[in-house]
Image (cartoon, rainbow, N blue to C red):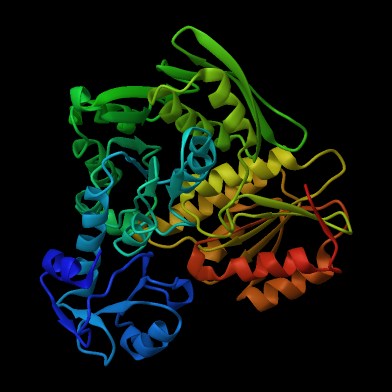
Length: 463
């Protein structure tokens, strides 16, 4: 696209660009991601103003800047930069008529499901997918602008912190396929109720085209609130489930000695065996969701099962498992935490802890639970005790106290911050321990997980 075409789409004005300027690479809001021929989005922030980096972005190869004021280099100046960013992404999508756009949402499981899809679909064509959890009004346009004319599948994770958020994202990138993984308690403090969360997540299926136009809704039959969304869409509906009747099923689900699931994939009278490389029983549902999408797109079950079986954890802090040289196994699931995800991770910790090993739960606080925070943190503490964890390190303030209060019978240590927790773990871990590190992202436990993986010594082996 040229700056003139972008200006027409976003309703801005071109500054300091007398000659035609073409944008031939992604439009990015992080100056570290600039590619030659791309565009830099200058966003004002609480501590950093992106406009201050405009000249640096041009020096790094950007062809122009999207800004809210002139910056002395080629730029499109608009009143609302984030809104304009979304409009640019919409232009890109509209120029990709051969691309199937797939959206994934849900309270838990959406990142893992997206990551599995990103590894399954390339067997049938170029696939571009959300990196990590760039699932909001900034991350989604960035992902969209990475697509090219050769992209067959564009897989977009869609997050929501309120009603209307998913609908807004589907306006930026109209979908052909929409997936809802599960309705849980993430952001309960902001939404007010699980029903409101279901309303927000279901916006994805309301935005789908009708079945005769290729629309496909993939819904988790094991979650009643998700299954009920079938009535909210004109698209073809494919359900998936482990416990409930569904179009696509996983039967004979088992776990190996490392806590990795295997199951028989069943669809339309056909079966194929799946053996996951991913850790945790909950990954069976995520893998099943991804398989359902591929099957719904018409791909053969044997090839789908093989591709799903080869998928690995790729997003940082999402059930990444490493065994240190001294025999300590670290489960880095510290990117984020909601109650349902915390419960699933603790079940995985239990499954991955063999005879003679000690399960160690290193838990930071969960955010955005509102009035439910005290009760939910105490319930998680109770689950720590129920799985037989030998040691709980609870990190943070009042809510971490609730972890400790609920974990009766478990050895508990309280740490006010990551540094104190690191000192406890450095001195207290022993060979053979299996350590789960999990918290909301703001708790900073990703850094703690990195330190645990790096110590002692530099030699580690992927489990």
